[in-house]
Length: 149
Image (tube, rainbow, N blue to C red; front, side, top):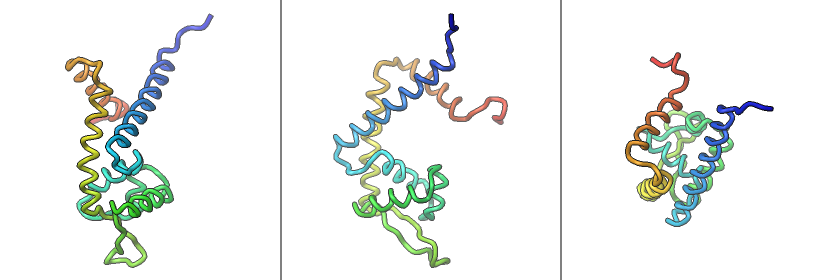
């Protein structure tokens, strides 16, 4: 007889929740006809956090992906007019990526789609359960309790 593996069950639940979140987010993006994939929306949100246009390498590092993945995402977003490549004034070998006005408008619409998706996902929870979930998620995001300041 085997004993239950609570950590294994939690890991499976987290993976299933992650897949559900991605499915719901993808559906909301399609319903709003924003013309971006979840990965592209993540890149747009990341771009918005920079004070000045970042290098492709900076984006790859922040997104924790290989530079080639960023190139593919930027290609698609640039083709749709949401970002533009621009030369770095200090180093002609470096390309920087900046949001266009259309990209900023898409970001605003993405915010609404993300809120709708979150409302759908969190609908079964009470306000108190949502607060507890938020605390638990913050704990998981921050990592090991022994290494936190």
